[in-house]
Image 1 (cartoon, rainbow, N blue to C red):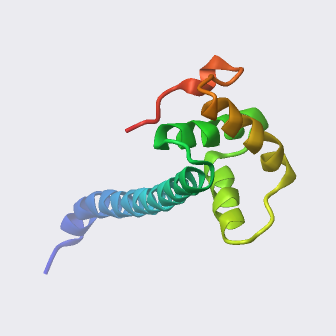
Image 2 (image 1 turned 30 degrees about the horizontal axis):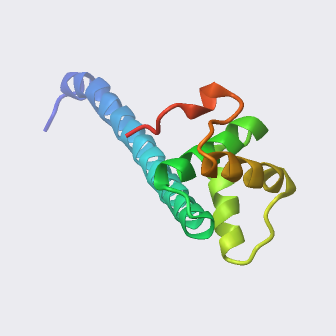
Amino acid sequence: MASRREQRSASPSIHAFDEKITRLGEENAQLRQAVASHAVVDQAIGVLIAVHQLPPAAGWAVLREISQRRNIKLHAVAEAVVDWALGQPIPQEVTRELAPAVQRWKQGSSPPDESVQAARPG
């Protein structure tokens, strides 16, 4: 049986272990959310490829441009595009940006704001 002294000295390591488990749980939840968000973005790119006959890089650029110009999170824009493909109405703020952005990329020109052109992270 452990003495009180041994129990007290083990206590800080148990506390550190508990903190580490909590941090790992939070990190796991964040990673799961990131994977789900990435999947929705990829689906939205697929919709833009199929509907507007854009190359994948242009589909990504269109989503990013709308996100930045309207200050909407990228995954929210992607969800709106996927929902639209499934028959749901698309929000007006996305609709206003979508057609002009697609047209710019189809014509091979860049968006008005050059900072929107940054490459997609790997």
